[in-house]
Length: 154
Image (cartoon, rainbow, N blue to C red; front, top):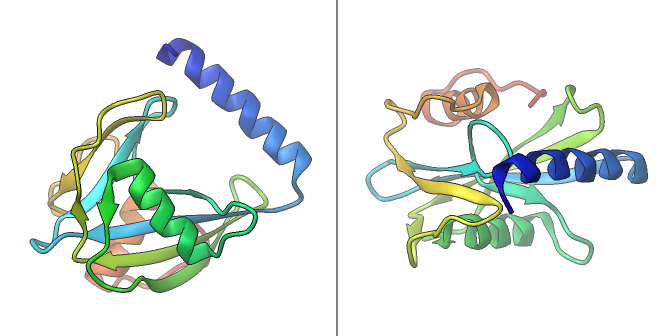
């Protein structure tokens, strides 16, 4: 699917999700490797760099969803148990709640090849984040890595 078709389709699917669900629950993951680099993804259908994550599917725990999203979006494995860092409300969406987890000792089992969902995925030095890193991603990293005061809002 071309990016010109993927973005409109993503908007339609998101609109359907908002209409069909009263609340959504998602997970994001601060995945850090042994060198202290953070793993980010750039979606094929949306601008910017994000922490890996996505929706919690029926029948899975939030922790299971975080590990699944790590595998799907980055071929990532965690070297330590997940740590739940916080629960956030996405006021921009109006009904999204996001659980943020930390994964230390993250490593890629294989390079993530681009596809219809993920255009790029790789580790970055947190002091040199790529242009287009989203404000929410920057806020979460400042909270986790620099001790900035956490916010209840995503």
